Amino acid sequence: MKEKKQFKIKNLPIILLSLMLALLYLSPFYIIILNAFKTKKELFQSTLALPLAWNFDNFVEAFDRLDYLKALRNSLFVVITSVIVIILFTSMAAWMLERTKSKASSFIFYLFISSMLIPFQAVMLPLVRVMGKLNLLNMGGIVFMYLGFGTSLSVFLYHGFLKGIPKELDEAAMIDGCNKFQTFWKIIFPLLKPISVTVAILNTVWIWNDFLLPSLVINKPDTQTIPLRTFFFFGEYTKQWHLALAGLILAIIPVIIFYAVAQKHIIKSITAGSIK
Figure 1 (cartoon, rainbow, N blue to C red):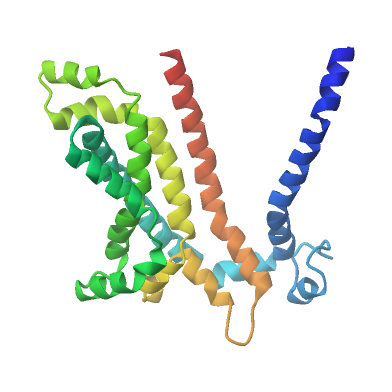
Figure 2 (cartoon, one colour):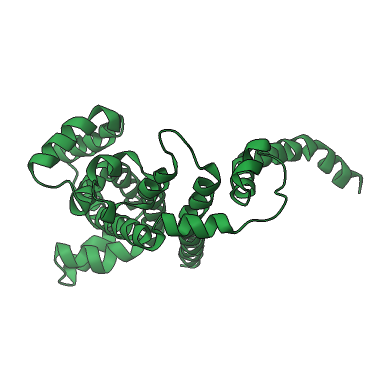
């Protein structure tokens, strides 16, 4: 009993620090959720006080003014298409770079890694100019650009994961008559499920929340994503924070659902791997 009490006393500072950090991390969500239910007058009176009445009209008005269903459809198209393309191309590239031991493959791999150091702001204007000349300032063009910007990190993650997959599997598949294409898709790619889910989560959150690139590429109102439509509440002379916060909550709900579902797949994959 004494040992248990001593153990609890020793861990008390760590527990308190963890609680403080958790409260600090959750405080923005608390402010957003709380103020999304307030009227504009209540919000400016006090941002931390509870609303006098939980007002759901903000969500109804934000849903209507965002044209939420159309914006959601556009965001889903861009995110799903981009993530699928990133997973397919980067997994194949990482497999070939990891399995091919040469100076050229090492150079290409480190070239991918070094590209992560280049900030988007340094290339955005030349990129938009070039894509404009190619008539790719549209939803198809933005998917192509997301593939370029998402490749470096995804290749890095896949490359590290592939080191843990024995090369004997490739050799056994070749002996059984599989070509390289069949070896990858039938043998290697199914084993990449845990890291593929991780790559999907990272890229989905990044692309879903991205505002800068779509604002440069997508100019038509019918093709705007949710972050672009949310900016509609911030005018030159007035800012409708109560509607903007309600719109932000509507915007993050799909990501939270996706993350919850994907998290289950990660746990299942890790459990299955440990049993094998």
